[in-house]
Image 1 (tube, rainbow, N blue to C red):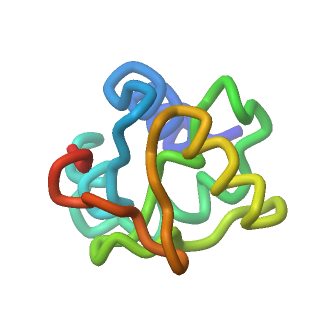
Image 2: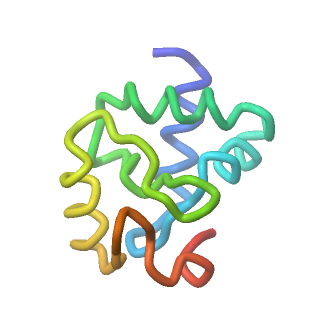
Length: 99
């Protein structure tokens, strides 16, 4: 695992609580590299620690779910278990629950 991946995972785990989501771009900013949003996506895709490292909480800037290394229905199920509503592949009330 790279230092970049470790930084992504630790930042996500420590700063994004259950019931909230964060965008790939915002997570990139939090780790100090605002242009690395695609690299953040790649790190989430390779996350070997799910769900302890909650990569299911990372979504696209427009509220779309984005990708998921496992079946997308598992991402939806995990989000819903945390109180996050999903409809038609988008986060409901996105502006209020996105960090």
